Length: 338
Image (cartoon, rainbow, N blue to C red; front, top):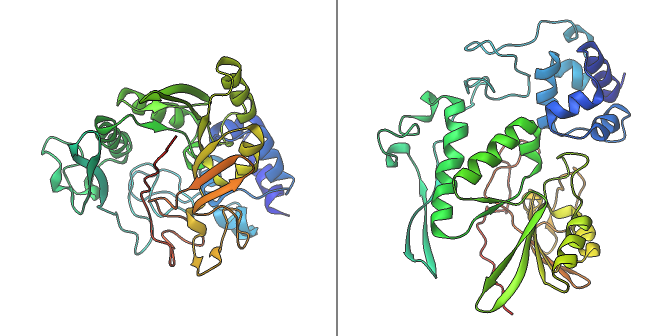
């Protein structure tokens, strides 16, 4: 029995349709169908979530170990929530589940601005004592309720960023792996904190007499019937013919699609710099596990379109959490000139 067949079996035993499972995972029905027909394989984040949702072990779902098929699902020793063998921390209470799993107590946030037009200070907080005593993040992270942290951390960062400059957000694939309900809650939290959420929409930006369209698209793991990048660009040109368009889109590997649609400049991430960067060759491992992927870091051109890919600040999960070689995290500043 293949991985796809085991996913289909576990889904049916749980009484879920492909559409219902996709809704819980934040992916389309077509994505679930491709997994079950072995056309593609799900990311490890989706596998862990499916184990929790369907009440099966990761040993059975991934490896087909029959001894693990009917075993009682693994549960967190703290809150008793169902967990998978792929979870390092309990998704319910945040408790470490594996030997060596430790909470990270570092945050990057904006502290102050020197000149509102030219320069901001970025600081990395090596401990949580920087927060006021009434902040939910003041106490050690191991004592912070995971739900409090999930709601507070984005708000702290969003408010700091939006206090310095207009701040925009588009979804990536991992947000949708947490489910569409979580994505909705996150978008609402960010919007309430002063961030403009660009979910398949755009707005005109003007400065010093110059004008451009700033557009953003949700990750392809979002709703199956969402507005496509091509439809969004057509909408912009119908409203403002010839207006230069800057697109915020998480997926770097969709650049040919964005270029063909007509976008002049695209800002992306997703590739984590290729995980390992080799001299003269660039990134080694793609998000699809293939070697020597394209568009992993820096500037690229295709026709009249330009793509900038950031290596990002976050940790990847391939081949394991936090693995990077010759591939430093980055916070990039891009200057547009007319």
